[in-house]
Amino acid sequence: MLLNKQKKAQNSKGNRMLVTINVIGSSGPLRFVVNEEQLVASVIDMALKSYAREGRQPVLGFNLNDFLLYCPASGTDALSPFETIGGAYGARNFLLCKKPQPEKTETECTTKIPRRGRHGSFKSWINKTLNRKVSSY
Image 1: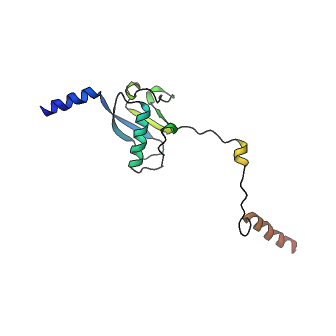
Image 2: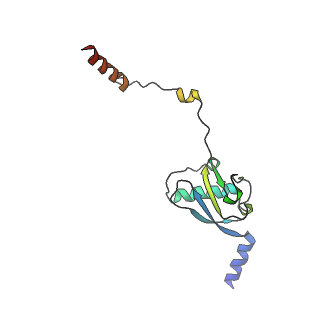
Image 3: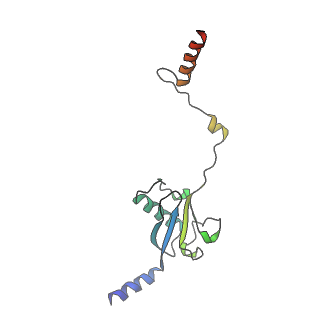
C-alpha cells in the first residue's frame, strides 16, 4: 500500500531519468537523477555542484554561464539552456565543456607591468654581468 502511494507521488512530479554527463578532462562521468521537465541550465548547475562536491579535478567553478551541454545525438550544436532535458532527443548521455574564451587582442598581450625590485630585474643583471666580462678582454 505504501509502495503504491510513493509511485503515484513520483508520477505527479513528472518522469525522472538517470543522466550521465561526461566532463572533458575528468576521470569519469557524473551520474544523477533529474526530472525530464528540468531545464538544461539547472542540469548544468547540478552537474557543477556535484562535480565540486566530489572534489574532482580539474576545478571547473560554479558559473553555469561558462559551460555548454552537448548531446551526441544532436550533432555539433549545444543544447539551449532554456529547453527541457527530456526534450533533448530522448538522450541520457551528455557532454559538458567550457565555452570557448575570446582571444586576447594585441594591446592586452603586449601590455607589461614593469618589475621594480630591490636589485633590478634578472635581465638587467645578466646584461651587466656579460658586459663586464666582454669589456675585460
